[in-house]
Amino acid sequence: MTDDECAQDEELIARIRGFDRPNVRNPEWVVRAARNARLEPAIACVIAERTPVGPSTLHTLFARLRQLQAEHGLRAGFRRYSGALGPEADRYADHLMARLAVWRHRLGAPSEESDGRLESR
Image (cartoon, rainbow, N blue to C red; front, side, top):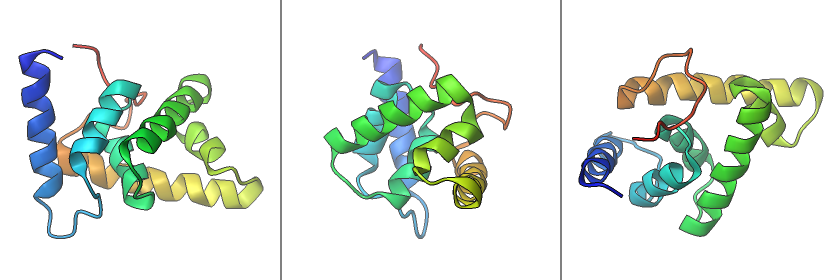
């Protein structure tokens, strides 16, 4: 990892910690696992606030979600990630998309048109 990437990660970690109720435990793990999985940090925060787990599990979850989103797109990837079917999967995807908008705003992340990839720098 380059010095620039380290600085960017530290800035993201500080921003995640800076909220009154961040709901994301261990932002260091979240940011680093997101980078390793090439997943947008805001998407990683959405998943991490729902799934407080360790770093290796985060990496596995993020890599799976990244694969689903690469194959099916952002919302459809969330839908498939849920493991549910029909209206329940749609509600789950809608909820995560709403949370993603919040996290993108908090982190100053890419617009809604983003495909969710963490850019290679």
